[in-house]
Length: 453
Image 1 (cartoon, rainbow, N blue to C red):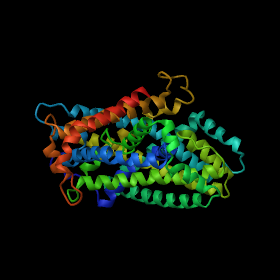
Image 2 (image 1 turned 90 degrees about the horizontal axis):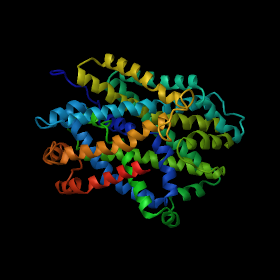
Image 3 (image 1 turned 90 degrees about the vertical axis):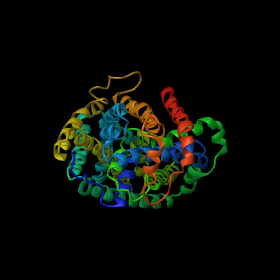
Image 4 (image 1 turned 30 degrees about the vertical axis):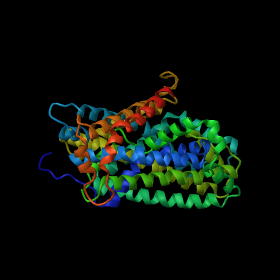
């Protein structure tokens, strides 16, 4: 790859929207609002924001710094920045494996979003009773052909976008999707505000609730906020590092990390303003996880005047949110293969696309043909998710942290020089003590909490 100019983003807004698109995903919608409502409302939100600042943003700057400092994807980036004889780049291969594993089940879930968008668009839910709604999801899960078709559409569309390159493909499509996503949020939130019991839903979500805070326990609320703040940014397996490698040195990484985090938080926060007024207005108990998206909210839309339209718009929003994550993480796979093996983009797109079509099948079949396959109490999809979320992300973040701020890796001086290059918010040198001795403990708490459930 020597002597060949590396393609980068065409604009600053393109970088921010693409990076935010990687962070914004289904967890913003099916987890954050419910966890906030159940853990003290505004109390949880404030603790969550605190941990975003003291945990999420610092580790995000470290991923971006490795990318921009090396100008390469994670394995080659480590090799360029590590000291002679060191083996930090071995962690790079774990990161790539993590991205593959994430896409092996995330493409299936993104396919569910696309399927429900299609079902609402063509009127499959029109005239249904609320009691009929759960069967739509269970029937889809039991149908391997339908699941495969929508998963394949997601994979093929994602790699088709990436075949056009960083600017014409990834950046251009993500700009459109992110603008569309933000517009849909505004429309859906305004509609929710007009519903009969909107105020009750908003109160449950955002009013400081000392009673639920005490009932859940301060320690549980704090660790829940820590985990949500940590996982929302998709840090720990280099999915953000690659975007640093496409950046210019015009702006500081701390300032850009704050902007990415703010956009991601805005989507998570607004999702609650869409969900809770609707659930409380139609007397349907809000839930979290897949049941919220595929049972609870469709039950609301079935009740709602114009529900076919609102359901279609909501699942278009969810399709944008999930598909933006798919194409940004898959860009890491495509870019890493280009850097590591010196092949062209189209060849990398084809190899990765074919591999993921095949590798995603166990997750698809895990709800029907392979439904008897379990690892402990977890099915195939949940097992893959556990490995990524509970092991690869927190351990990876800890490794990025040690690499960036200790003498054993790149080193604090080099990290600070890179992170503070350009105009904007600077990272203070005095924070290095915190990064070395306190932040690792916080990440270990998340790792242990995830392992013990």
